[in-house]
Image (cartoon, rainbow, N blue to C red; front, side):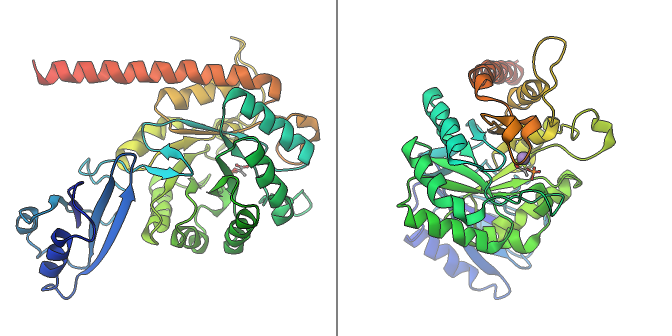
Length: 376
Ligand code: PEP
Ligand code: MN
């Protein structure tokens, strides 16, 4: 059960204490208060854990400060919308706001290689007004003989350059709990010139200990990538681990699923699940067209398959795009063949802008149609 507190009520105020006092008569019930900060207000929610069936919903609903009481199923307790009873939850991080209405484009190399390449990318992002990037320092590779990433050694100069070019958030994959500490230390030492969104990659999508580690820290938001062989339900359950440890700054990412049915693409593009995740959960949704498509093939209409897949996600309401770019893909140490180049950046961003506009028009049209239906 979740008790949603009215927005104007202080989390430490008498109304919340009154509710907690009332709940003390149910000794089997544990309470946990969660504050979710949005753009204009902080939402306080009280979670009741334990046998809640004998707790009278109506009594609580009439208590001062209560907006509503929601009975939740055991599935996706914290990230779920529970049949539309709960609103989305956005979050603010390092001056940017992420929710189910926003759209951010995270651009950069699969793996950080040279300072020169990173600088070229960041310079181009600044030129085009993009303030979000992706940079892999720790890389999970299929073969142990492939480049594993520069690890913590590259963090000082990556953060310094990000600050120099006005990047506010970098998405960076972590493979182990101590990578989170290494990132936090390097960021602190660099004087916090930028922010980091921790990426949990598809290969770690059910590494529950790593998910708990990302969830038990509050500093960094987490980008959870769907496991390449996981059903949506399994992936959402795994994602719930992050929230259950206390971190509510989560974005759910679709990156394609592994099956030969996706051939000739690297994976089967699963972006038709964007609206499904927005309906089932309160989380913003990211799409990763690079790892979904995995080729630079161009369709007969002259548009790259990666652009087409991106458009499919954006026109369905995606809130974040994670996409690989490299100034010299032939020299990239990881995932070069699927990287877009700097020459393709302006075209890509313009294509996203067109598609986003189309999504907004579609949304407005649907709102008008629903209004007509309700007032008919
Ligand atoms: C990546 O984003 O570079 C990556 C390795 O993605 P995934 O975990 O989806 O394969
Ligand atoms: Mn990659």
